[in-house]
Length: 167
Ligand code: FES
Image (cartoon, rainbow, N blue to C red; front, side):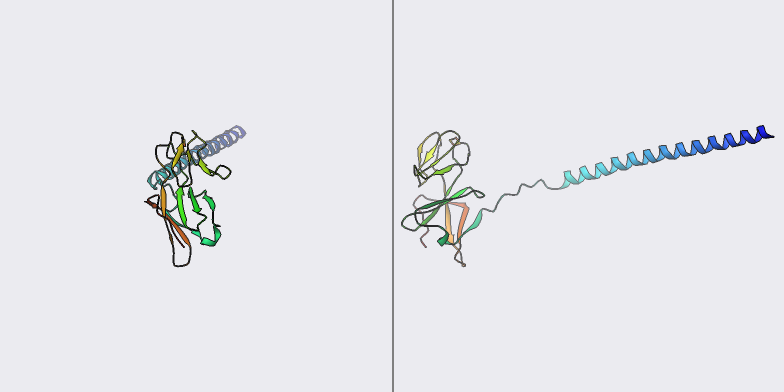
């Protein structure tokens, strides 16, 4: 009788052990499937969302004329342009991007030139090349004054080297 009871208990324990092992394996399997599905959804979302590079706007304000003293060269790093106010008071905007291979140039006040650090191109304050491999002058962009007295540069409008903004 005791033997029979013992056998029954062992079988019961074995059965419980099997059930918990099965439960464990089912849980692991469900988790793996869940992770796979979630990964698929995330990757699909990334694939379907547009891969947009956000560029700064082509037309932008650069502040009031009073911010620029006559005879000054101000580099707008974000927009890669120079805002130049001549000694006579008029304005023009030059690209700071070298026309050789696109490096960003620097204003050298002690030499009164714009110089490219990459291959040595140099430009005068009108944007004309005076040295180096750059094939073209620095483009000059249209400038205007908006209704609120703010200077506006439009990089989508390249103008001639004689175009200036008088305020
Ligand atoms: S990129 Fe300016 S000289 Fe080459």
